[in-house]
Length: 129
Image (cartoon, rainbow, N blue to C red; front, side):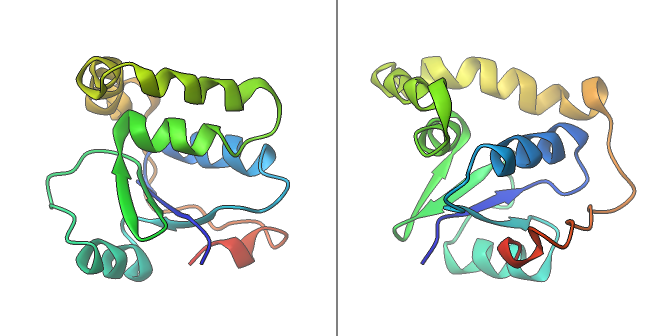
């Protein structure tokens, strides 16, 4: 099973992050589901994710990763120097998550939000659940 990234489908920053990953994932490692979608909701239930989680979520090898742990685990699969960011995993998660939490808390204010989730272009639609 491919790793799945769950993201906030109405968040402009989250949408840009998905586009960023798609452009740097030539092996098509990741599949995606918006948190608002039926597939996203089903995965949240399956993995007992709390309703108050305000994070991009990575499900990989039947484990759930949140916040900076999810982002850094994603980075190690991307082409180019992005995979080097994975070395930041040596920093304790509470320290790594300070910046993540600030961004997550302010993402709508700083980047705005959409009325609905994006419709992926046909060439990547198969990667969306």
